[in-house]
Length: 428
Image 1: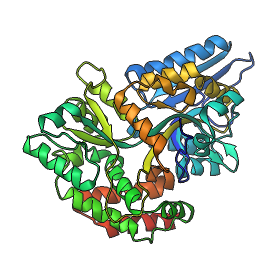
Image 2 (image 1 turned 30 degrees about the vertical axis):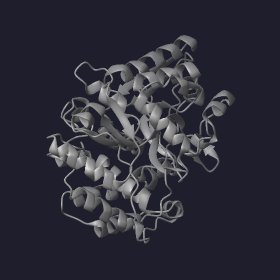
Image 3 (image 1 turned 45 degrees about the vertical axis):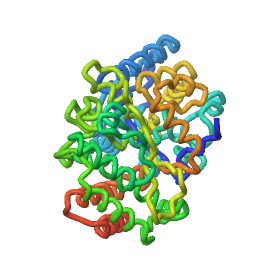
Image 4 (image 1 turned 180 degrees about the vertical axis):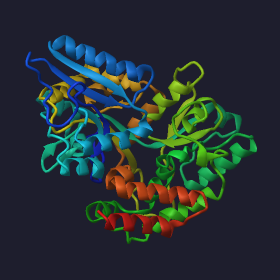
């Protein structure tokens, strides 16, 4: 497999959270007079195989480590960032929490709310430096990469066939033509959960990836400057695409992952033909099909090329899912994270979440055709950027996402997106 260049455009990430249960958060290392250790872990798998995975892992770790107890708390994904930030700020953070790198994790580290991890040699070799770079701050690793999650467009092969579509779109003009074919067949072309903002923002991110050079993306990350005209081109390109009315009816009030009426649910139940999403989508879609099994006709293709841009052909955007330890977590926190990264446990993770594991040793377990296409494209990509809201941190990211939703709602434009980002960055 080609050497991974994961998220070459800076990165760090933020995810769930876990923490001391009985002992609460800061100021306690989780130990007790008896020598027993208790930790808490926050994750975002509220149902199904993902929830079972975490239960199995803490049981297996406890079996190998007498006296260590990890208590789980499942939190809805869309509620995670807010609850975690509140817990971190209150000094009552969980011991283990989800992390996705970028500006979000950097802010947590700068606030002294996370601790550097101890990575064993086997884990470091299996994962590689590229994935760890997304979690490295001042030469210390603050997060354990669990999965790689590049984005692209998932689609229903059956609905494409029903509409007479025989070739996958490779340019934005091709995609617009596919949208028209689907509408002519009375099929909602693209599901979009704009109620949660970040799925809508994904569309702007990918147009920016096509419009802006890697150097411009790097400069924006390092200096928080957005004066290159590519940022407004991205908004203009999205506005032009949105004018073709490609999204499902009511997309502004559609959630991303919650129930059959969400954007993932629409694809899972053949109520829409496509969705732009990261590599976690097959697992989410599977949880929302009528039989809660994988969608058998699910396919994937890269975000199309866009004329007039300076982004490299084949560049991708996506994220990493990982776990971090809060500042007062006991030493067993790092030990548990290394335990999760054995080949067997990474294969279990990839199977439970139907996603791409961070460990190269475990990637052979991926058999889903859509995910295999994602991995093949990822391995050929010249570079991969983190999702922009993760990259720029919570405040700037939120401003960016809100600006994109306003544009799609007809209440803003590309200039307003950029100005909102600039204003938010000025307050950092």
